Length: 336
Image 1 (cartoon, rainbow, N blue to C red):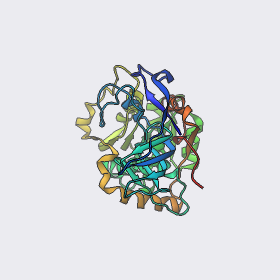
Image 2: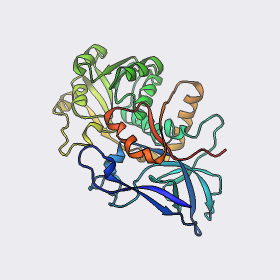
Image 3: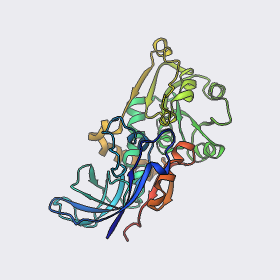
Image 4: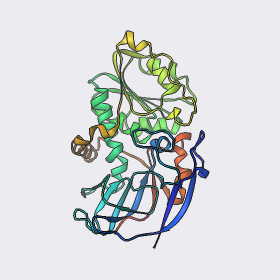
């Protein structure tokens, strides 16, 4: 048996290119005592993939050149000599950009089987995507009923869920997205109160129209000029849940908002966060999110590329606005 993999071949300069990766095929080793072999089924593509490719450390150590590209996966245990994992178990973890992962279980966990819940939902609504939305909005943004919440990258995996959770909290929710189709999706299907197409509209003027009473919570995924326009509309005591700044990840010299000084007079609280900060409370999030899914209060959308070979090209969709919802690669078929 051979294992197909993508390795990090070069540090990207600007937009990620397929030449920044190297395709490899290696022999699959059998597990030894304390290990298990996972056949990866779904690979998650996330903006943080670009951060991991840089030379500098982030919240994880920098990925050495030549290493298997880092990435979250869902898979099935094919062979096991690990006491806590059995053949047939569905697992989630840092399996990397490869067909098979041999692991001792570090950074892996077993997924429960919830009747009626598709396997991919653990990336679409549960797992790190849903947890990021849940804790970012409720613990960092702290929305109150009747407040106005603005979500950037609102048609993305995290943004689309965070906006719906804002509605569950009883807020007025405005999303910022990059196409008319995306704006239509988040308003017509997801229940956002309004949407702004940043490619065709003046964001500052549109925010003034959609948020006449100002903005109380900014769920920030983009940074740059869009974040700057949002800051101008923040109310006194507003909260910013700083989840990401995807507009800056490909820039050698990122340009942040220039109006941070207004935070002083408006007493704005801006908090950066990582989903791992809330790891002890993940079961709470699973319970709440699964309940909302069952009640029809929360929807998710998958954008699936077929085949591991497509991973580098598919990753680019995160940065050119080509995806809608959660971006995945289907590496292999689900077990019958």
